[in-house]
Image 1 (tube, rainbow, N blue to C red):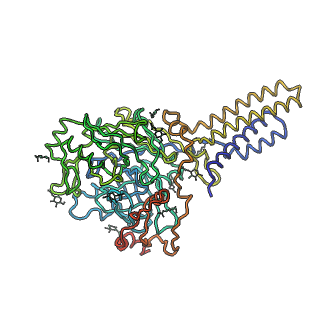
Image 2: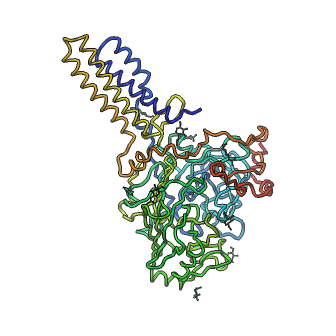
Image 3: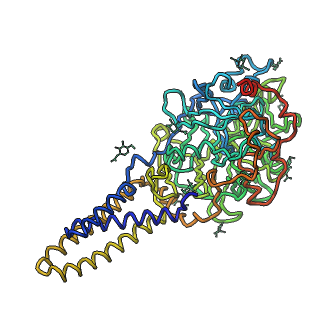
Length: 601
Ligand SMILES: *[C@@H]1O[C@H](CO)[C@@H](O)[C@H](O)[C@H]1NC(C)=O
Ligand SMILES: *[C@@H]1O[C@H](CO)[C@@H](O)[C@H](O)[C@H]1NC(C)=O
Ligand SMILES: *[C@@H]1O[C@H](CO)[C@@H](O)[C@H](O)[C@H]1NC(C)=O
Ligand SMILES: *[C@@H]1O[C@H](CO)[C@@H](O)[C@H](O)[C@H]1NC(C)=O
Ligand SMILES: *[C@@H]1O[C@H](CO)[C@@H](O)[C@H](O)[C@H]1NC(C)=O
Ligand SMILES: *[C@@H]1O[C@H](CO)[C@@H](O)[C@H](O)[C@H]1NC(C)=O
Ligand SMILES: *[C@@H]1O[C@H](CO)[C@@H](O)[C@H](O)[C@H]1NC(C)=O
Ligand SMILES: *[C@@H]1O[C@H](CO)[C@@H](O)[C@H](O)[C@H]1NC(C)=O
Ligand SMILES: *[C@@H]1O[C@H](CO)[C@@H](O)[C@H](O)[C@H]1NC(C)=O
Ligand SMILES: *[C@@H]1O[C@H](CO)[C@@H](O)[C@H](O)[C@H]1NC(C)=O
């Protein structure tokens, strides 16, 4: 059983308190007190000592510097999978807790000649020495948009960034190898929920959770913006793990509590969509899910109709897309309308933030196999949603919005991006600290999580108050026993008191980087720690008791797969959704080279 935050905090304050006593003891130079103090100091100093190098810095993930996708162009990121490392280019998915890559069957005959390159390169598990095959499973991702697919799941080493860049490493990351063209590139998931496989008793921890456990990132948080080609001299996407880049957004922002359905956690109220005088959201506020996994924006039909009227769009029923010919495009380029999304944390009123997308944000192209004959076309990245579960703000929106997601405090921020060439070229990375108290590689083998919690602050205060009380007691003691030395003793104590107080506040402050948002992301909402907190892998027990003989890596699943984190939605909401279960047995029967590899062993 893991110690609760409360226990840890009280431990922290005890340590502080005893150290203070130790210093007082030394200062007083009274034999027994000194010895007692030294002993205490020895046993507590190890835990007490704050080594700032133990608190990891946030990591800014360099973009791949490529523009990818068949519905973009979009800025991608480099990912190394397997041993020896296979380099692939992928997108960042704010919805997924897993990674997916494109397998060898992702490039059938008829696809573009440089299909493998176009898809960000393939991952061949049979070329990796560290690949651990699992079975074939559904993603259970984007099924509300009808975009769920399946793949050969397994585990392998993952490193973010190009080879040699020293990016963050996870030794046993969950990887799906897929073929479906609806995800033209792979992606790595930023959602920290664990994944349940029926082939394993325990939920498999996510990439982000493993980075935190390995003390690679300071907290379960990230910041992302998609980048775009139309601003400045093309601006690549920006991704920061455990922090954010202060140079990418201005002071205008909203903070939104995460939605209780963990599969739609980044849900925000859109209070209005306007272009000039045109109201593009005629039926009022809707709640929309922010999701970098998909390219487009999904709006209710009446809103799509308003867009059609405002911009002369024509819906293509065959592809379900707003395809555009070059004359339509030229017209829009000339009028250059912009669309402003007004986002709020509340359905009406409250603080809001306006995200303005220039027409160029919508000026994208779609290619084969999403459409065919012609095999490429301009399109307007808008989709008609069948119901409110489909309302989504995709990557198109994230070209102009900066998203900061803090899973530990269960909230996220949305801010308009700022476009300043010099600022973008020199990121100002800020740390988001963990809500967990400082514990530097303690004896439980836990890695230290940076930051200071309300409990620790309380601990410091208690310790200082206690120290003053002890000082007073000592003062009284010395006055009685050593009247002759009265003057000197009280002088010493006074010095030590200020010394001790100063040292502890110095040390406790080290984990912080002082910045405009740090306090706001951190301190301000600490009382929300008790808010619904998602259970993490290590805290959970699986109700799915799997026959140990069946739990082998190459074992076929029994078909009951619960998607990433979906189990919690079910658990927390009580709305059991059978869609998350495997669609059919056909998936099990698909022979794959990975599985054969496993069986051959
Ligand atoms: C802090 O930890 C790092 C590595 O864990 C070590 O190299 C360094 O010497 C430590 N610093 C202090 C002051 O203990
Ligand atoms: C579109 O792509 C398909 C498959 O690659 C090809 O057969 C077809 O000729 C292409 N059509 C055009 C107009 O290029
Ligand atoms: C690995 O898989 C690829 C794609 O299925 C196949 O072409 C290749 O022959 C395999 N290599 C080995 C050594 O099995
Ligand atoms: C932890 O991080 C180190 C350094 O990035 C890496 O070498 C190691 O494989 C990671 N361990 C796990 C279990 O992911
Ligand atoms: C976010 O907005 C709040 C007011 O809503 C403001 O106080 C704060 O400074 C903003 N954060 C940043 C980083 O600008
Ligand atoms: C472009 O599309 C619009 C709307 O569908 C149509 O009215 C127009 O005739 C098309 N122009 C060309 C050159 O195809
Ligand atoms: C917005 O919602 C929050 C709680 O979600 C509430 O505390 C606040 O009063 C609301 N503000 C307005 C203006 O309705
Ligand atoms: C929403 O629409 C999609 C697509 O038609 C459908 O699959 C899904 O079941 C619907 N969801 C609800 C809650 O009605
Ligand atoms: C905080 O620490 C507790 C106890 O060690 C642990 O159970 C919990 O998962 C941690 N929370 C995060 C966000 O790491
Ligand atoms: C996934 O696993 C966790 C922990 O074992 C469990 O609490 C949750 O109910 C599981 N999800 C489903 C859908 O069974």
